[in-house]
Image 1 (spheres, helix red, strand yellow):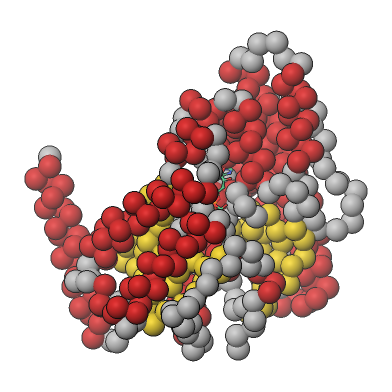
Image 2 (spheres, rainbow, N blue to C red):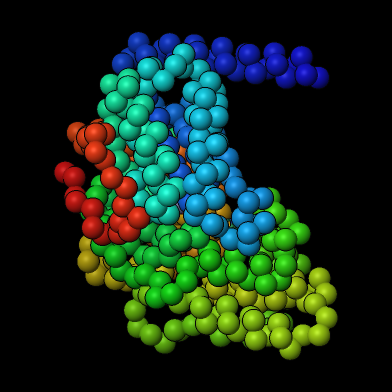
Length: 384
Ligand code: KG4
Ligand code: ZN
């Protein structure tokens, strides 16, 4: 069994080497992406045609479960320990002989947790300076958006600018009109919690996270909700009548806490009903705001608007996908979801954002580069 696995791995590496040899002949360049903005250490190698040569992610599940959330200093220490191994694994998996085969290092430089960003940035700077590689500082949110344009995804059509974006993750919840690389108009943002944060907090309230420390809170709720009645509990849709594209998730979280205080014994069946009822309302809000943003987008760019990209960790949720697909059909927009493995934080999205920017002639200076814990998408400069 082990021998067979080794042979298969060797054959795969050989196939990668052959493919690499062919692409090197065509002068394709390779970008290494490093992601450490939160609790995932991700490194990937992507070529300039969008082929993913390697994608390695190490998550800090156990640490988060132990501390009931992310502790920035501990997360940074875990990145320090993990990054060298993740880096080695990504180079090895890619079939490249060493880091010097890479042309460019792309690194998440914000937004995110300062100590965590610092670990990835310092490593990327050192690699770029020591090996004289091109260097690019990448905005994490732009990377979530642009991964939907990776040419090698099996999508019916690739989103071309302008397109609408619903970005839903643990740290962010916003609607954006993407007009070009670096050219983003914020249509709506969360006024308090993000939807991913609400999923995580509810999972913790229902003690799902403690029982399954290796899985995102959102996924646990999604799984349990499949067995529940989504009308068993009457949560209200927050801000339903506010005529804008903003979000609010703190109310529904408080409503859940209030509901829990009235339940004497929390059985699995009740938990499933709570998950289903919470999820229905959480996604109702995404649908209402997204449909309004489609209208706002059309008001701005007319019939040029053809795609709605849904990205960020929460976009891996199948219930959300079905509901937003349906909204897209009503709005006559094609909905694009990156594959789930590229929705949660990863190095591929950083490397691909690097390829997009590199192709347009963008380079950053590694010496003295700084990270930006707050770095709104709409503050980027358009690249033409
Ligand atoms: O994009 P991401 O990996 O990190 C940030 O940039 O924040 O997103 C992580 C978030 C977490 O809140 C997690 O609970 C949520 O994505 N998530 C999900 C699912 N998988 C991950 N939420 C709902 N359903 C899922 N299947
Ligand atoms: Zn993210």
